[in-house]
Length: 334
Image 1 (cartoon, rainbow, N blue to C red):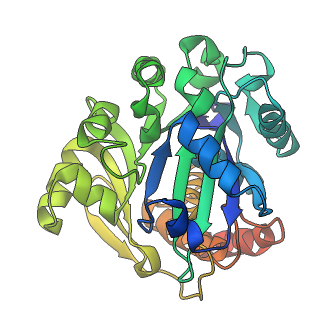
Image 2: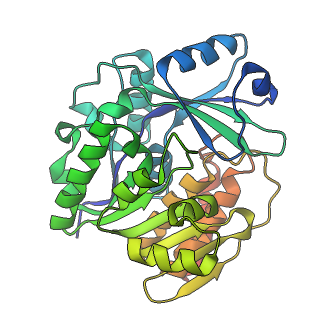
């Protein structure tokens, strides 16, 4: 029996959410659902232009959001990420500790770069645009990896977003080999980052010689497979992952369990903010699959959890939501 359900390597980002649509006037490209990658100069300019508006601040990043769900439901998790020697880095580390998420930040040196940031515009139709400054995330190395915890985990969760920086990309490729040798299954989540910030080659390099489980949304699946034909997409994803999930928003998800395809329906709600829905899906799915559920049960449970996060602002579920979500999980298993 392994000690951890999920060991994640991912981006540490401070989310700053603005409920507005005037970013068009600031020269920001608003492509709903996508991510714009900012360099330090662009991030500083945008932050200065938003300085008179008080945002909603929280800790984010796909891995952090995913682990928050798995841990809050009762899973055992470990997080490796990179922050800078600044107040934002302190804030991120404190948040992990408050959630009882074990982390390599307790022992590893911080990067000589600022902690990453994600400036989020919430659009009137509940969609969102992410403007991410990568910052310290570019400098994850093998020294940051707790290999003992990794080898003692059921799943290694990694983000394709880390492929945009040479150092973090090289680290991920090396860590995948360590995980495979230890019998730790590899989970990859694609990142909705529009070209040229992330290329098809970036995604292919993260898949490398294949992963055990892949999470992606419909846009990411089409982009990776270079096709809009669902049958072609299905076959191409089979060569990338032993199992995979394509999330379809309010329509639910398409699952491939390694033998056959399954469709699970979404849960109808009135969305306010879709930020973090995919991460909550991943976190709930990984909790379910490591706590006795079938692949289809995990997909249904993950759709249910994701439907809860989109009904309020922010990428993470409110603590009060977990009791109801856990009850839904117990009912699904009964």
